[in-house]
Structures are given as C-alpha cells and as structure tokens.
Image 1 (cartoon, helix red, strand yellow):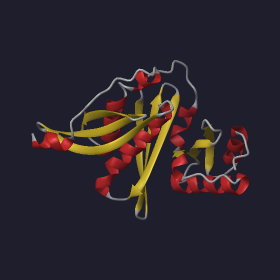
Image 2 (cartoon, helix red, strand yellow):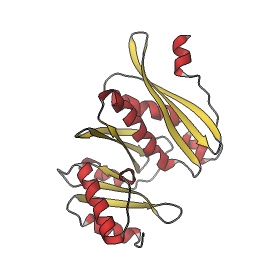
Image 3 (tube, one colour):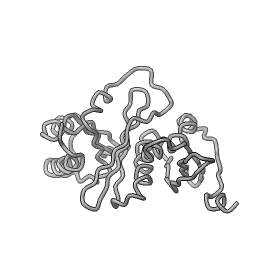
Length: 231
C-alpha cells in the first residue's frame, strides 16, 4: 500500500548510500508511476534499482516493477534542474547498455527543454537484439510525454543500405483508443547503431508529439517492410 507522499519517499531514497538524488512521479490514481534516480558514483544501475525496490517494500509495502525505476549515471545529475523556455522538440542525450549474466538493460536519456526523460528496457543479452532493446527504451522515455489514452508501440527495427550508406529504420504504431497510426523513422548510420536506433525513433515521433498535446494528431501510414523488400 502506498502510504507516503513524494517528499517523504524522495528523502528516504536520498538517504540510501547508492542514491545521489531521486524524484517520484505519481499516476492519476495516486499510485507511484515511476521513480527517477541518479546513482552514486561507482554504483551500477541494476544494483541501485534493487536497493530502491527493497527499501520501498520494507518501509511502505510498495512493490514496484523494475520498469518503474529509471536509474541515471552521476553525469546526468545537472539535467534534473528545471530550465525556462521548454521547447517542443525532444533531443537525444545518451544511450547505455548494461549487461549482467545473460540479461541486458538499455537506458536511453532524452531531453525536452529543461526536462530529462529516461527510458529503460530489459531482455536477453543477445547482440542482434540490442537495437530493438534501445528502441523500446526510447519509446518508454517518450511515453512520459504522451497524454492519457495514447500509447506508442515499437514494431520493428531494421538496418538497410541506401546506395552506399547504411541506414536504420524503425516502425512504430501509435494507439489512440482503437485507432492505429503507423509511423516510420529513419537515420543514416554513421557510427553507433544503438544511438542510430534512438535517433530513428525520434525522427518518427518528433513531428507528431506537438499535435498529440494539442489533441489534433495527424495520421500517417507506411507499408510493411517485407512488402517494400519484395518490390
């Protein structure tokens, strides 16, 4: 049962040796939606998340899933400060993948004006699956900007060659009630394929996010990647 306010929980989490700072976001029903925390120097995000979950369960009986706890490194601490002049466009900040045994966790950091958006996704530590893991983490970060009833879902991540240059393509679906809007994002891959994946997701969504907030979304359609490949 969640029986403490955000200020109390944040103070208790900051008292943990593994946590540098923490911020709690509540959902519409008063439940904890997500906890953003900055890890203390030298601490791994996975272990910090476990300490936070243990503390909340022991002190308040709150049992959060791993997806409800976003852990950032010490270098992102300054991004939690609020800045004036919030802008509509979402900017890419960083991507990291943490491996532990056979599991991997992708963490993507985005920024919109003075607001830091952190998304995470976990799965099997398979090299070919890491771009999709990063795509899911990017979508999870963007979901913090989505109004109620709007959901982004990652369908596919593919690497293609356009002429002599490799490109990264993503296919997303925007769900608004029963309405499906298909989106495609692309970016030429000049370096890190994981960074390219996050940039491709932003390419697909940056044009649409302002219209969602105005509740006047524009519909896009793309054909399936398989059909394009056979054409």
